[in-house]
Length: 303
Image (cartoon, rainbow, N blue to C red; front, side, top):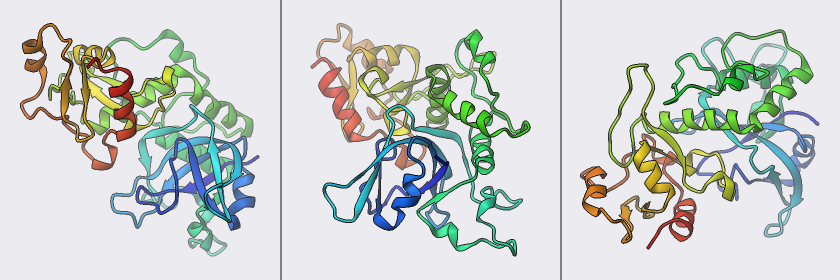
């Protein structure tokens, strides 16, 4: 097993869904197979406008031939392992490449940087993970953090402890715990929406510097909803409650729909911003995915 890098872009011609599968041609089979049972980091090329750089991690569960395309394969992602970084990590941070293994003997970028699937050293993986999860300016939750969060086997900051190979595997495995994933997911969603409730349009920060808004899953985790930005919306407390109970939902065009079963329609309408549509996210590619919105309408929304 070994850590790897999978190059992915939002406009990819391949049949990719980063939280579920990664499609690649046969020449990359050996490299991809080396990551089975281990973790990879997703990277978006610098030539992509607004590139996110290294932006997420996931664990490869298995690799199978693609039944729909000859000489193509699918790296299947372990459910619940995909996690986006609150802080996308650039290819070059101004002090040189973050993925130092791409430098050749002359200190220049080697041709390996063009490989869509490639191995990455544990030390480079650790560097990217640390920077991607760093909390230099943390978005504090509405209430105090669970006491056990302080006792987790890692702290997400820029300082780097002495590197131990198995320590890194334990650290990245901790990313699968719910308390950590909820915390990271909240940071990703709140930053995508500018810490503003997407329904009311309000941005409220309390006296302790905490944003009075939550990160709501459109398709809940308990119903196999992934921790990806396209399955998240920033909502204030009351709106979150209504969304979870199916009193409001969204169309594919992000119009806010109110259930006929609401007993105080005027009150609910007063909470909705004057456009009647979801506000945000700041980047179009972070908007809710129609598949998750459709699931919410069919399974949660009270017609």
